Image (tube, rainbow over all chains, first blue to last red; front, side, top):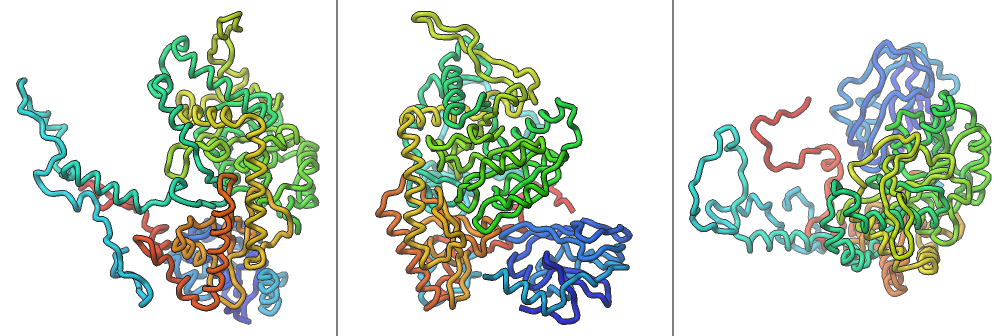
Length: 125
Length: 506
């Protein structure tokens, strides 16, 4: 499982890059969901977000799930191409498949990579 | 997926003949029936009604029959084998149900006939309403909803109408445990309610502190699946219901798992306010491709006035040899009509027959044997497949489809079971169990079948360790191998041919 150390993580399996403001689904999340077949981003650039608000709806061959704003702030950008290539959420969870970028987010309450790895391991047993 | 696309391994048999479509089998000029030359004047069809873009297949009768006969052999059915699809209650459907539904008086009745001329059908519907009331402990029952989720929609509309009639309009939230059926949040969402998920505790019950924290004066109610999708009866069910009632909410019972309770527990007696029945599960009417469902809804006294219209009732009491006269009634504050005419009447005949054939003791025996069969299977399998909740189960149980030391997943195990000629269990549901395999044997299976199924699953666990590829590429013995589920989920247009003016929506 790939958990980059420069990112921050939520209990609902989103990642956040404090350097760019990008957020997406973690490798653990995509593995649990298996093949992702649909994604719909529910917010637009300029929207005000509170942490925990649904920002995207994701559907795999197994399950449907929502992705939540990992931090509060303003939506700075939306990954417009993602809905045409939902499979990148599986193949490149930390790269091409970022969901939105958030401006003004406070990452201080999020888990670092070490804490998130532990959190994932706990849930696997 | 064409045959050539599939990766093959040496141990896989050569591909079987794939059945062409009926269009591919067509040859110009072939006909099923040849009409004699007309002995009346002919006239051409109006130009506007003719179309050139409709390539109807041309075949002889024998070609059509053989085509569909071959296709039917690709199918797997409850008449063909064991079908332990959890949550679906795929019990054997006795054939006497079919005989009764085909009686000409039922089969040929028209819903617009004057009610005096369909008294037999109304008597059957009335009696079925009465039986379902008695079986589940409710004050009234509507037979109208088309199937389970439609019953849920009916129930949620009734709950909303009840609060609205009291001027209690701030209730907008539906509480749904994470062990509920997936249709519950969908049904509430369709009605426009906000969904709040309630977690399960470590014994698989509704988490009471979380429920208490969620209950306030904005709650419409709770949708409770009991036994839940883990196959567990909520040990605190009365307290769960009380907590919801104390905040002014109502409790919806998802009756899809009623098979475990027949003759033992009446949901109405527990305090559940409204519940749907799945006639196509509990009462053995065909489903899973075999016929429409049917989802009657029962309600407690305080919700009777909100039921859909019409209900079947007695217009005039019988006297001596004269039977009662049955007719239609509209509840005082009805939510309206939910389905054309009277719901799926043919299914009502089958369910009536099933209940009449079993009687009270027989219904109880159904539940007892369904629970016994599930626990027997659970006991045979739990040393091989981890069952996350260490409890006696009800009519079904959920095991984890993963094997220590192997990378196979629930989907691989499910597909491999097809090679052993079993229908796979429900997989990846409920979501709260890793790699869930949800197994519901039902009461209609004998010990030999259960033993053979357990043996197959134990054998598959050994294969998972020694020959994981065999599982990754399963099934091998079916007409088609592993389907491309991503393609199936993404490419929703299945037509081999589209009308010329069809435009794909962007």
